[in-house]
Image (cartoon, rainbow, N blue to C red):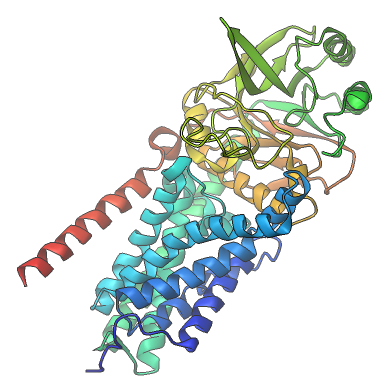
Length: 523
């Protein structure tokens, strides 16, 4: 039996393997779009920790996560510099701080892997562990589930159909299962051990068969389910929807001198779609740079345009409510009848920390918002659906689209269309808008709803209930795009039960950890 290196030994080769895993994870996502890399991205990391103990495994996992999140979310420096007016010597450390926090989860993953002595048990536990950590990351400290591992497969239509049962977490689990099977085969082929334990031919064959079986079942379900959803789409009632992309620069968006002209630009773009006979016009997040219903002149300007078009409108606007001596501000979406009457209003539920509000403000009064041009908002009601005539809209404002529980709650409450309005101008010409759009595909598949996306500077587009991206705009262009979308009312397993699979993985992981600690105590 090989001797396991001393606790916490540092070695350059291990760091290189861990860094390679971090880069492979990043290139799996937009704009590299090498989604096939995700199927073996974790193999170098796991190979490098095969003979380490907990401490050494954690270090290499942390390096892997740090490399991954720094290269995945580099665009945060641009946002903080351009719109938060932070100098590079402050913006870069803040990116490192966030990447370091997220890297803790990768560190815990590889540290736990390194502490499992049996290769058979390791390969069985790692998919459960990875999903458990992703799930915790999705809600801890308000949550930041940006580009979970499963999202890399957003273009693989047959594979992702199963997310209407298990959500994106199920795709993450399958990806890690394949990674561990490849690792087992690699160790057996090279005649190397896992923590001193040889890997048998039988184990390599068993895990290869298991990975292929799960892949086959997933693809089989995808083929069957996609065909069934397509039949539903063919017979479903249709609505013609236009997304309007005003392409307003964030630098001038809120300047008083431009408010009237920017509002008129959205009206003119909407009226240009009249020949397409759109029934619903969708404007982006905070498309109107004023308080709709309170700034009378600009509100009347919008209402006149709506009446002229004869269509329903969903427009993004800030709003406020006076409560005694206080004023509560909201990031809102107004649903407006063709006659100009407001049919409903949705207030954003999941706000951006240090962007739209400051967590722990009463205890940290010296901390402010990183981005200056947005307000200090209050939260709305989760699962609220906007209803008017034949419409039942579930609205997701900006990065609410990366939180699957929000869209599931809306589908449970009867939403027949999902609408994501956003302002991705913050990100500039980086990979962030493409990453943001990719995650919206899963919201459509999970709930079997068409998803309509309107972004200020792009990417706007349409995603059908099977997850097809049927149309998109380019970044930084004025655009109006009209498509016919189906209104489905299917209640999927995921819509009804949410992240049951992730919770199951977390429960099983906790049970296994408890049993492991109990046995260690006994011995």
